[in-house]
Length: 115
Image (spheres, one colour):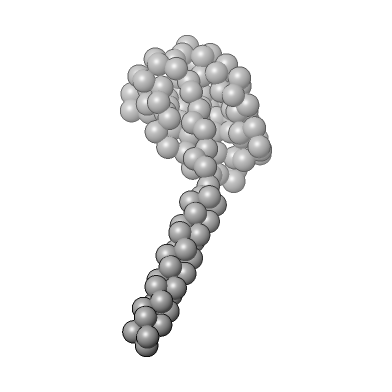
């Protein structure tokens, strides 16, 4: 009888721990931040295509730089966050983005890309 009581108690403790662990796992996965949507500028985009496609996606372009390694844009997204976003120049794939805190003025004279 004593062995059955200890076995039941141990089972209850293990079952409780398993239930608690499953609950914590669910809470952690449910609270994970969603990956922000990537911007799309299309493959082999021209300057006007970059401007138009970003505007369609709610991005207010402030600065644009282009070279054979990357397209770099700076501006605000639809929620007003200032970002620098980097794209692959041929595929148009968004490579990375960084928060920035200097989107106060437009820098249209700094476009380093001819249409």
